[in-house]
Each structure stands twice: as structure tokens, then as C-alpha cells.
Length: 364
Ligand code: PMP
Image (cartoon, rainbow, N blue to C red):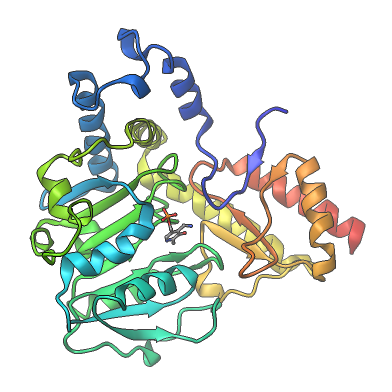
């Protein structure tokens, strides 16, 4: 089977050019006679890779100098615990938006260490919108405000006006950007800390990227495990112990691919087009439906339902045969989900829409 269009939510499709470069360099990186995978992380060669990874990320996200870039283990999930450990003391209050499964997991962990105030959110497991600002209840003494900027399972994404209203609180804002980092340009300086698991828009799994304002580093509770304390990473170029060397290298190739594609702004223009055409098709199809508040629909994770769930298995079987993979929605939400991260070419979305049209004509 040749390469397909893979709509997996993560680990997800990587740019083909990146995979080809990695393949070409796999056995013998830059005439060293070895693979990056086989190199000491302390070697001069590997350090040059690591420094380039950081420099390129700083460039494409325009990360200000007073922010540290930390590359960590444990995915985004470990930060659900590390954030309160690094930023609070027992008895402190923190503000969390509860907008879906991922923010709920972050809340569960934070609740072990401090008092969590839910700014907004329903009891529903998978809300289809972020509640309106009129319902938000911030606490006066919160140490920080946490958001999941894109809920991967439903495809609900914070929009500019809501983000501005969060920043306007004047508190440190922390964002889980696992599923929308680098999908569009953002102003990093408005955030206190940004974190993301790598396996969607960054590279392979096994790595998380943290962008942390320097003044937030060095306040961790005494009990914080060494490898969860951001200071450990900041003081050791993220190499206190052996990092996920190959994943870093591959993330670096992705950053170079973003640069060569014209940067995040150019990628964002394509992302907007991809999402818009897919939602437009769903809305006018008279067959498929998407329940998410229209003004908060994600650019990255497009969920949709068929007229009856009885058709789900047929849809998945026929789409797979057409070379369109991993369209099954998350079990917690049901239906279908097309994750269309940066590496999904526009032709992949066009092929999906073509297929959906044919399927609707056949089964409608
Ligand atoms: N946050 C979000 C928004 C996610 O989509 C995911 C993974 N799907 C996570 C956190 C957890 O990431 P990890 O598996 O890297 O811990």
C-alpha cells in the first residue's frame, strides 16, 4: 500500500518531505557514520541538532528571549501535575476552564495539589461549546488561569475574542496547545506557559514541548520530583537525563519544513482553507452534521456525524478502502473525526470531501 491520507488524532501524519529526509539520513547522519538514534546526546554532533531545534522553534513561534524552551518526557499529561507543582503551594487557588475531556483531566490532577475553581464548564463530558463570557467566574486570588486551547476529542477551539477576555484578567495564562500549536500565529508573550505533546503538530510521540516565562521557573514545591521541576530542564538544556533524542531530531525536521513552507502564517492560511471547505461541505451536505458551536469550531479536529450511527462501520470500511484512514471519532464522543493537522495536505481534505460526497449519494 502506498502512503495514504491518515486522519488520526495523534500520533498523526507527518510531512512526507520530513519522512524522506529522515529516511535519507537514517543510517548515516551528515557523514558521521551513524544514525542520530545511535549518537550520544552529549556529543558535539547531537548538541548541534538540539541547538538548531530550539533556534528554529524560537524563530517560527517568535518566542521572546525571556521564555525558556524545555523539551520534556511524559507527554502533555505529565504537565497536568507538573504545572500545579511548579506554580502553587498547598491551599492556593487556580482557575481552570472545563471545556472537554483534556481540560477535565488537567483539572483532576491539579485538584490533588490545590483548590481548583472552574471558571466555566458544564457537567457534560463533551460540551459542544465554550460557555459565553457572561457565565465565566474567575476567582480573585487565582495563581494562574488554565485553558485547553483546542479540545481534540470534540473539536472545540478557543477563539481570539475569548482568549483576549482571558488575558484581560491579568493573571498568568497557561495553555495546553497539544492539538493546535503552530496551526496559526500566536503572540507567545500573552501566555505565561504553553505546553504540547509532540505527536500532532510537532513530531513523533515521546516528547513534550514547554514554553515557560522565566520568572515562573524556580518556585516548585520541595516535593516536586526532579524530572517534573522545570528548573531541572532549564538548568540542563533539557538534558538532565537522556532525552528522546530521535524525537527531538524529527521535531527539528518538522520545524525546518514549516520554515521552508513560509512559516506558521503560510501554514495557517492553508489550515483555514482546509477546515473551512470541510465544514462548508458538512453544513450544506444535508447528510452529515457537526454539532459544535459554529464560532468555536476547531481548525485541527473536525468531528461529524452520519445520519444514523448504523452507517458508521460502513463509512469507515469504505473510506479505508479509498485510502482515507483513521476517521473514527473518539469513543467518548462517537461519530467521525478528521484530524487535519499541519502535515495533512490540502489534497487530503479534497479527497475526503470527494469521498464523503460519493458516500452520501450512495447511502443517502
Ligand atoms: N491535551 C490534549 C489537548 C490532547 O489532545 C492530548 C492527547 N491527545 C493530551 C493533552 C495528552 O497528551 P499526551 O498523550 O502527550 O500526554
